[in-house]
Length: 276
View (tube, rainbow, N blue to C red):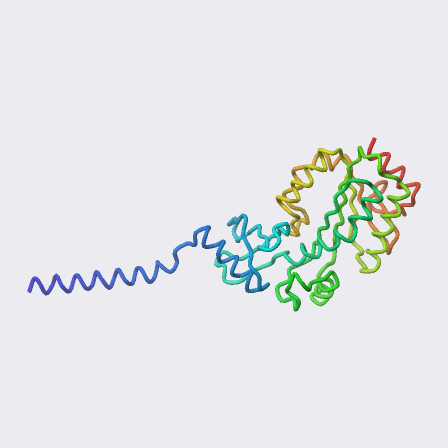
């Protein structure tokens, strides 16, 4: 009789253990490595290529710095909820198109300013169900059409980091470059977009180059990434923000509520004031 009771207790304990494992084992928290692997899967499912996750954080949602295996210079952010069932927003395609715009303006910028770096931030919304989810085929037109369909904004920032101790710059050539960017803004009806000129020495340019290589540019809600902290003091002292009405450059440095046309003479005066 005693043996029978022991057997019953044994089986009860055995089944209780199985139930506990089933109920709680499946809810075991994901490790950081398993989260990285899951993020890679989600990105591959969307884009059809392999990615690497460089850094991953749990901030109430999963946030990751990623890059495609075939091009480690394209650093972008990807988000997911903590259960990681689906991919949230990511800015892979925005980063790809930003590099296309960089290439478009890099040589003209060098002709105008001398040694410099062009880096574009496309502060658009997510591309969750975009029809052309491929780095090989996406263009700025693709992104803009998608954003218009979704009723989202189309703000971009074209940043030019300029080595100001170079003798290659010339204000008339610089102003011609500004107007060239204005033509680009007008073509795409980018009403709230900005050209930002940052001036610094050779060390500043080196810092910017290293920061871009490490952080890329986030298109999160703030429109800025952690790399801003690296050169924040230098930038705050020596930068010009240029807006556009159509193709006409304007600024609001005198009156923040009004935009005044920025012609060549005013540009020269503004630059002298900034670099004083």
